[in-house]
Image (cartoon, rainbow, N blue to C red; front, side, top):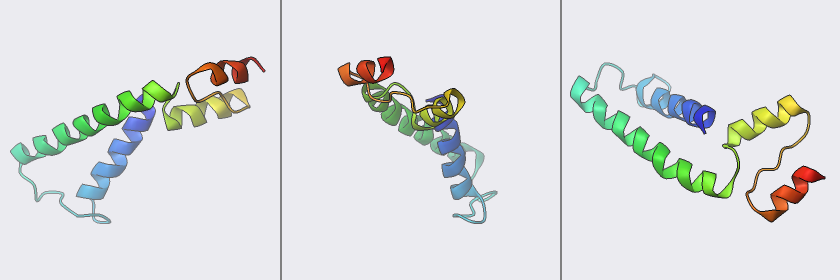
Length: 87
C-alpha cells in the first residue's frame, strides 16, 4: 500500500494546497498544517487495513506487479486467488 498511499497523499494534498485546487498554500498556519497531516494519516490507516484484508496488494502495487511480470497478478485474497495464481 506504500505506493498507492504515497500517490494518493500527493494528489489530495496538492489539490488542497496548489492553485488548481483550493489554493491554500501559504494561507494555513504551521500549527493548522498538523491537522491536515493527522487527517491524511488517519485516512490512510482507515483505508489501508480493510483493503489489505480483502486484497493482496494495493491498487497501484497490483498494476506495477502485473506490468513488471507481464500478466495480471491475482488480486483477491482467498481460495480463488490461489487457484488463479497456480493456473
